[in-house]
View 1 (cartoon, rainbow, N blue to C red):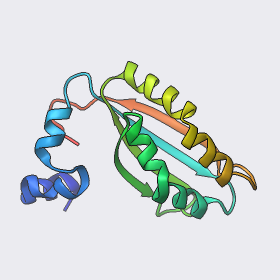
View 2 (cartoon, one colour):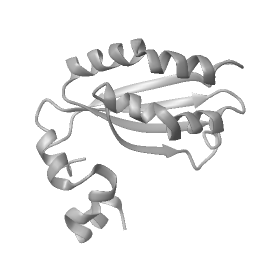
View 3 (cartoon, one colour):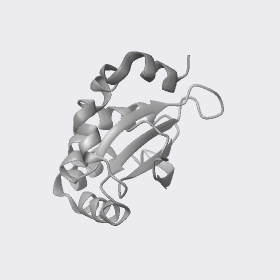
Length: 141
């Protein structure tokens, strides 16, 4: 069963563990909302430290800077398996996304966390970012 069919069978309860409640998500998503798909290619041997940073304070820093964390994945197939983190953020609009990232990059807690976690080298070799809008037939995330 694919994700869409599973959500339809389970109803709104399927959204609750992921997004804090279907009503809350529906209220915060409108035609200006954008989603950002990010793919991080970790440096050799750095996926686990990268995941640890996200398990720790990084997500809270995102949220404090207006970026809602939708979901996180790791690749299961080669050649990406073992060194790729994929995640999705939600922003109120594309313009606000740019502001959110500026505030995030300047956030003193983030600056300190990045310096501490990358004392022995960068965790990410390359990252990709794609901004997206929901279609009129998509489930609200």
